[in-house]
Amino acid sequence: MALSRLQLLRPPSHRSLPLSSSFPRIHHPPPLSSSHLRSWRRSNTLSSYRLLSSSSSSDDHRPLQLDSSTGESSTSVVGDLLDYLNESWTQFHATAEAKRQLLAAGFKLLNENDDWDLQPGGRYFFTRNMSSLVAFAIGERYRVGGGFNVIAAHTDSPCLKLKPRSASTKSGYLMVNVQTYGGGLWHTWFDRDLSLAGRVILKAGDGSFMHKLVKVRRPLLRVPTLAIHLDRSVNSEGFKPNLENHLIPLLATKLEDAQTKSEDKVSLANSPKIAHHALLLKVLAEELKCNADEIVGMELNVCDTQPSCLGGGNNEFIFSGRLDNLASSYCALRSLVDSCKSPGDLSNEKAIRMIALFDNEEVGSNSPQGAGAPTMFQAMKRIVDNLSHQSMGESALERAIHSSFLVSADMAHGLHPNFPDKYEEHHRPELQKGLVIKHNANQRYATSAVTAFLFKEVASMHNLPVQVSLQISLLPLVSIYYANKHL
Image 1 (tube, one colour):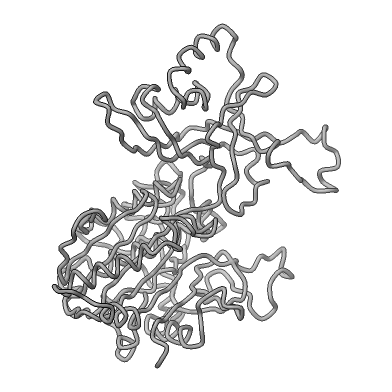
Image 2: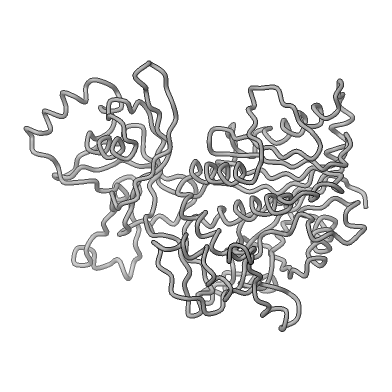
């Protein structure tokens, strides 16, 4: 997807890292239920899908090729994306699913605390905080000072998160205190079938501790809207909920006093049971197949249980939450895996192909697992140092950075047919019209005339359409940084 200046001087081979944020166009697929997504993805019915292409109309209706040995489409991007979305309820699950796919593809898991033994032609990755990930494939012809071709995206999305002390009671109901994370449309969280997912810390019988991911798939919580009979002005004055008082999910009706007192005696044993309802801990323990007493910490998101699926008259739309930015994370992951999965894919590569999936972008990226941390640059330094087989010095890393190319892949706002006046007149990105390159005169994005030109050249090599935007939208978006300031 991101190619260095030297690579742009010649046409790429069919195994070069592809531009990855384009989605297939869908033409009359069979009916699909959410419970059959995975089995459907592996069936021959994907032969009815077509690739999105910027070439001629005849090419635009070229059928996908099926693997004759398995009957599975080799480019089943839509089905795989839906699987990824449905697995990735939280940033932790998104990272875990990416980890699973990388291991299945033959990538080696590294530990940031250990010494690394890297070799040209090798494929590696590491995770941080269970919510961010850096993966890379080293070209067999890589020489120290060669560049990195990077796609960066993020795993987090706006959501509601449980407060450290979530237990509260109101008017005979057990409520769960939450706080908003990121810039969400919070009125859309009302009247949905909600549940919980995230990371839990467990204490084992031998005194050790471990992290485990949890996902309660059944509807567990709900934020009910006030009935129209009690708020007649809502349609004329708008729905303006107080986020501290009105956005508190309902868990259950309050238990009888006798039962509550009995549970309270148990709850005093450790702090998590004081902070959280005993009923909530029981539900989590059932999912984790452990005792409630073993739960000593948690980091949970409120999640919508409605599965991601296809929709529209021709099933051409993907209906899903968390597209910002799991769509870009998936495309980056798929690009890296597909570009080096066959023997010889790295044999002529002189650079290092890398993806970085960061956490906490929605709140400024200033965390140890966010893009504001030096995670990626520390990895670059370690890679160059390891491959130099000697004391590196600063010049080798500086040469590598100045030969590198990075695409920051996020989502963009496609033209909304009901609100066209909200878009800049000459920069209105549209669905299925291509990738969006975002510009900003005040340098909120790193895109420049040089980097935009280079990206368009790569897109042209792959027959991919490109759009330009000055505002954010629901299409694949790229902000491009090219370290070398000279053509």
